[in-house]
Image (cartoon, rainbow, N blue to C red; front, side):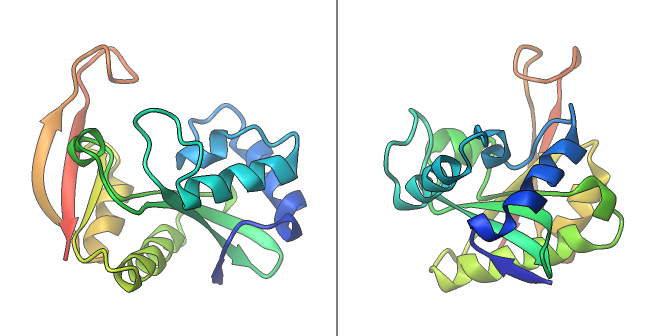
Amino acid sequence: MKLVKPSAEYQSSYLAYIAELADEERYPFPLDFDHQDFEAMLQKIQNFADGVNLPQGYVASETYWLVDEAELVGVANLRLRLNDAIRHCGGHIGLGIRPSYRGQGLGAELMGLVIAKAKLKGINELHIHCYKHNVASAKMIMVNGGILASEISLSDDQSSDNAAAIIQRYRVV
């Protein structure tokens, strides 16, 4: 396993990853970028890293792919700074593991690699958030040194279901 920057080398594996996700909600958010023009998608990912043409409310962020030889198995996004809204609910790191590779500890491995990248960039205190019901995410955050700092409740109109969602906010120092 190695961490790489997105590239055309992994296009077929990326497309298979997206197909495998089917209708599942995609994490992190760059997986929602239009991938029909793969080169344009890669440029958009680079623009986010460079802080260029960002939508309102977004901050510069780098996307990393976890690969096993030629197979893309996970995607992570590292926000290089936080604004008030993202500090409140969002955090520095979002990630996802390809469905066929889940349950193997790869999420914790990917998170550890991205935390190391953040530290190299001088981000010494990371905020990492997850839904309280997502026990697997909470475990991978804690395995990587995350300490639960607080929980917040999202109002009904912000959550994906009809009940208020609880967000756990962890800190990694």
